[in-house]
Image (cartoon, rainbow, N blue to C red; front, side, top):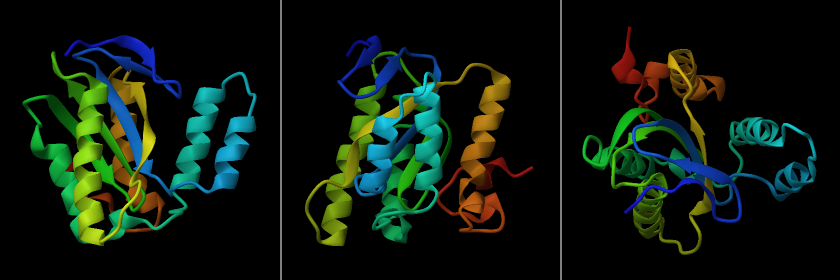
Length: 188
């Protein structure tokens, strides 16, 4: 498959080019309350994409929704999916699986477009998680957010953000204590 540079599926803009480091966030279908989504849609700020992403991050950290990823077998399933093609289709730099969303930084390889990689994670884990939870219906939100990592400082800040997300959400005291994260591999 070919990489398509800047594109949109009618929702958010995405950038797809092999060799770039990308910060990606995807979330459970019920992870944002309807009021928050409507409030964000009505926001007409000039810098709305960055503003909207910050609002979403703050809301996600409130752990709204069923938080299916809080269950160890579901979080382990998602973590296994993130690591499955590491080194083959992409390079996994850092990740965290929160109770209602996932953050990861990857570098995609030639022939494996970003949208295809994210879709494979989401479709595989949605089917398996729904089966484990004995439920049907939409598991993941249809969209994902991606942001190109600009430089080394941005990369270091993004990794720190990812690793500290469980601490910020009061799930653990130290980032390396969260079992569904690359933080334990970054111990200093």
